[in-house]
Amino acid sequence: MENLTIINELITRLMKMQTALKKLIALTLFWGMSCLMVFSASANPRSIYVAKSGNDKNSGNASSPVLTITKAESIALPGDRIIIHKGTYREMVIFHKGGSPGAAISYSASPGEEVIIKGSERVRTWVKADGRTWRATINDDFFNGTNPFKEWINHDSSYRHLGEVYLDNKLLNEQKMKGDVERVIYSWFTSQENGKTIITANFGANDPNQKLTEINVRPSVFTAEKPGISFIVIDGLKITQIASAPAFVNGVQPGAISVNGGTHWVIKNCSLSYCKSVAISIGQTVHDYPASNPGNPEYRDLSQDISTVGHDTIIHNHISYCGQAGIFGLLHGTQSIIADNLIEDINSSSDFPGNEIAGIRLALAVDALVSHNLIRRVHGAGYGIYLGPLFQGARISRNIITETSQSAIYLYNSHGPALFDNNIISGPGKSTGEGVKMISAEGNVFVQNLFYDCAFINQKVSGRTFATSNFLPHSLVIKQTIPALAMDDRWYSNVFVKSGLDKLNNDPDCLADYNAYIQGALPTAWGDKQSHTIAANAGFALINTANSAKLMLDLKAIPKVTCPVLSPEYIGFFALSKQYLEYPNGKAITINADFKHKPKDALSGFPGPFYQYRATLDNNQTLLFAY
Image: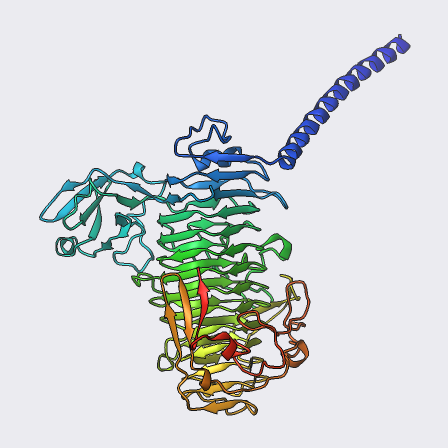
């Protein structure tokens, strides 16, 4: 009996093993097929077509397009190309997945076709009210989740909302009092009555129900559902009328396009306009660090693996009429490229107060490259380029910045080094005390720039001592955390017009030489032994057209000042950060090309952004930027 019991137990165990083996085989086959399907999708990318004549029940091929970009996103796999045909699309696309290395998911306009994506909806239910005013009553379900006509642009605002009203694509002006709408043509006022949004507007002699009349309803056009959605390409789209909420370096960072912590995005050839706050956000949501100190520094809880952040490319976009910033972001500017963009008319109504307004605003942007952007007309408390805290290894090169209310360049709280070369900067005037402002920002190297009417400020943060980290070179690994001071800066081979460096103190390890000071600009009292100072009028002017900028300069006003080769050895080693000026791959930088990419040669004996002014300027003019 005992042997029979043992045999029965063995048979039972064998049957259980057989069942388990079948399950294992089935599971293995399932995962094998799944992996094969994913591999096949990646290895054989397809084109998914979107058209206004489409249907979301269609397959998405060229002859059977889907209707919405959202539907195309839901069926796309890594490597797929979403091609959008002409028309106006009104949707917010939330990315639930991204691409992969070498297999990005791309969203692009069909070649030669105009694709417009709006964050607004038409309103055709206007009722004539008193005098010249009209009234629309809007239910909350008309909006995409959040009602922008209930949201202020900031906590201090007395009446400015995130919502906007447009007539034939032109922005109307919000009024503080309802009674003002009657007398101000092309204006509006909003209130809440019985749980509904009431908009009272003055459209002049126009009937808004017969015109294209729109209001903001969506906070974004493209946004990642969560951090980590990467390898996305957005190409050739026109994005407009977005109720994007304000962004904060130590807080939420929304935008009309928002990477939301994703990496390796490419945003190119796009037009972004009338974004209430930020056009392109390359940041992620973080928090305040009120108790930061050397042992507990800011951003200590963010990724220290530089390969997992940033690496975005933002090139050849036109960004205009955005309230807070053209491009904004914490951390994901790291090893990113921002180039060839036209950024203009930021905060044009001066709605946004505070200190976060700029054409380009980046923080914790290690090894960022900002190159050949035209930034102009930044209003209110706005800057051209605002970096900091923390921008070790950043390079700001060949940019044109003009007509900013505050400093063209604002550098805040970083140990450096950072390189500023071949830029053409027209400041707001030395009488304003603004131009290039450095606050607890050390290790900044300015070479071959042209500064017109720029005051220079170099001082440490007043009040409490900040704990400022610096990193191992080309990484996010914190090396040490000590206060950043006004020190270790360099100025070589620059041209200063009307305002120079004479107000700067002789701060530790700061160097200046081989510069030209023209038309009232004065040199430092502690350096500039080989620099030249002349009284001649430089004839400086930046000539702006709709999509370009030209420089006018009197050739005879630029003296010849032969500077040594701006090599790593000449500029020097930055001991605190343990690096020279370097590319992200660690190779040391020699500055041996000018604004026009002309190499330095035997005839290159002039300071500023052009090695040979006579060969560069035709009739004292040269084209700097054309979009």
